[in-house]
Length: 234
Ligand SMILES: [Zn+2]
Picture 1 (cartoon, rainbow, N blue to C red):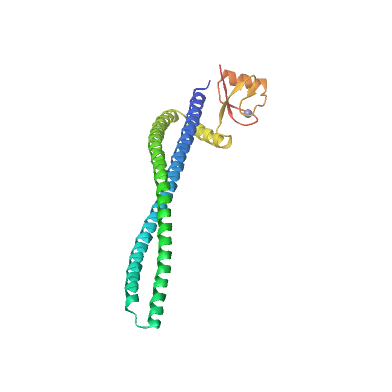
Picture 2 (cartoon, rainbow, N blue to C red; picture 1 turned 90 degrees about the vertical axis):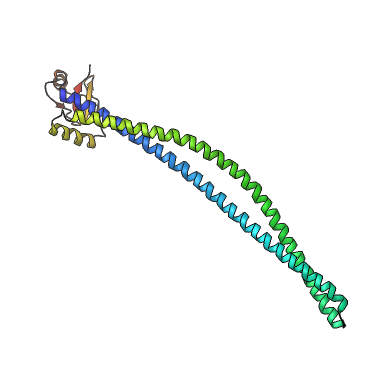
């Protein structure tokens, strides 16, 4: 085989390896990002729940203070009832008492609702916090492995590129640019072997004379159909 062709075959293999490693790292990074997003979403939901619980507790404290105030008012009105001097005054105090009792009942209902909701949200929150903790721990473990794989792949890429540069330095620049052009236009396959008289790039049957020239390997022969550079294997 023409020695430079052998070098191109090697470069082609390295290019293929590089593409595979790069694509592997891309999907590993995507996987990391996706899982980070999932966890961030869940954290945001939890944060909303915490805020809702805080708001409920604030409402609860407010309602408790209101209830206290109403109780004091009621106490005052109930004492006042013994001090009234006219029917009109009695009616007015009665009216105030009825009004306060109604208010008390409403606030008590509101307190009950706040307490029930706080209880529900606390249960749900604690369950989801536990789930998130487990998921975060799993993710930390998994991401360490993924990051190690990514680093390993980066190392492989460096090695592959160094090897590629070494080989490139032995190839004549015109041939190299021909290779690059062909690779871009021929689905990353610029150099192919001939098997059973068939070009393994486009699968056309080559003329016997051309096959023979490839076998002899004195010069670089290109497929008459796809223009790929041909080499003899075996
Ligand atoms: Zn061909």
